[in-house]
Length: 530
Ligand SMILES: NC(=O)C1=CN([C@@H]2O[C@H](COP(=O)(O)OP(=O)(O)OC[C@H]3O[C@@H](n4cnc5c(N)ncnc54)[C@H](O)[C@@H]3O)[C@@H](O)[C@H]2O)C=CC1
Ligand SMILES: O=C(O)C(=O)COP(=O)(O)O
Image (cartoon, rainbow, N blue to C red; front, side, top):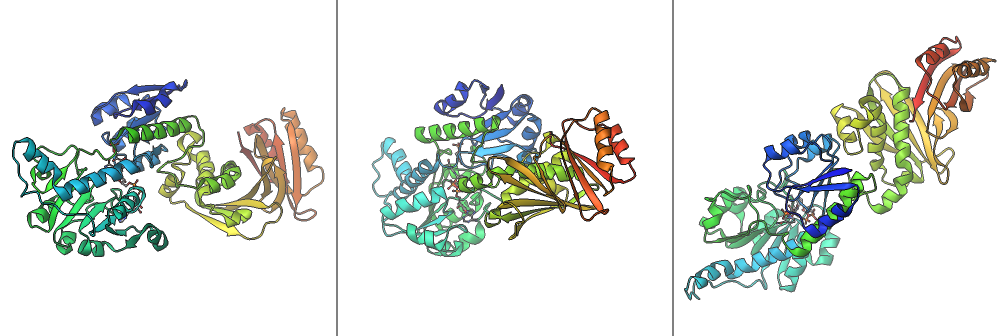
């Protein structure tokens, strides 16, 4: 049974997905302080949050059974991603469900700002009929600067065009071609600051975007600009904005988000006559809440059940098409890594993944976590390593890793060679995934083999001498070890040779020592794929 804790108000409709699952027990407790969350998190396998719960390093460390943190929404700045990644906890969000709803809120804010709707409403219901103070501006023929042209920014740009606005935008990841198609003129931040009549931000809050708009930016800004922030508090420096409002640089600002939420009662935004504010309502529509709760619940169940999942924010995203092509090689990579870790002495320094054949045409960088998982789990314990934290653990240990492409393939259409360099030696193994047959080890170092990576494999390096195979067979037989398959290879008659035996049982320490005591045997290793 998987225990799931829901610590923020999440749509019941979406949660039903979790509640109906026979192997999931859902507990919903909202409004917890950090200390309270720490005190109850221990038995939970999954934590589901929105933006209120701060999933700090301390919370993550107390959640010793956590496998996944689900964010029913987009922004994950309330979750310590480094802490989750280093603990191998998958963080999942629901990236699409909040797009339209936040875009529409941005427009609601932009229009309310242009026409002073909240201020006019307050006066009207107070019994005053003031038509002079609230003369607004039109959106038509104005320049809208959009900072961050991802899902929400692009939807905002599309709607702005329908209002007759000219849209200029800045996003390091939007190509000129795509921008042209969307009718957006790409601009630098400086150009936006100097020319836009309205500016709206739609970036995530990161170390790069924190205070992206601060005093130096207000200093060059077009006088009379109106600003909207329905993304995250902290992207625009709050104190600098208040100053710019007071100096008349900014004509008005509409904010849905604050650097600290909820803001203190004396926060200057709350009583500034040129500001309008909402309490982080961008995502708060029935439709969006159902969408994000459903989306994240589905993926959390997949993670818990070890089924394929999507929308993880701390694992590099791979397209479904690429993932389908790489799928047959994922287990192979882990097994090859596992084999090498058991075959080598010394501490691991370098791991290289060399792809040959058709694989060489693909982006195979996502194979790395699987190889590292195989290598590291031998040293650190299988429980400690997974594909989320494998890269992090390798980097922490100064293990260098890279993917190389090789254009040649000696036998099968696609092969993967993993090389492991340690402080004292370098070894390599090659494998392939054969349709209908599964994973195969096709070379150990230079020696061709054909082994399915399962069970126990004895690797013996010896001198090529008559009678040796018989002696090894007898020794294993007398120890009750059944040999499933045996392969031998040599460089030259009487030279160095290898013997690879696949056994049904693990060889004991005594057996290993007896084998090594045979004078012609130079090295014996057992690789366990169990
Ligand atoms: N007020 C609310 O309730 C909601 C707020 N949000 C906020 O909106 C943000 C954006 O959401 P989406 O559009 O779905 O995310 P997205 O990931 O699709 O788009 C973000 C865009 O910002 C761009 N970007 C990053 N750094 C930048 C920089 N320095 N300058 C310019 N562009 C930069 C990225 O390249 C990306 O295209 C979220 O991260 C979240 O913080 C999202 C949903 C609801
Ligand atoms: O999805 C996001 O990034 C949001 O900001 C929405 O936050 P919320 O789920 O409403 O607390």
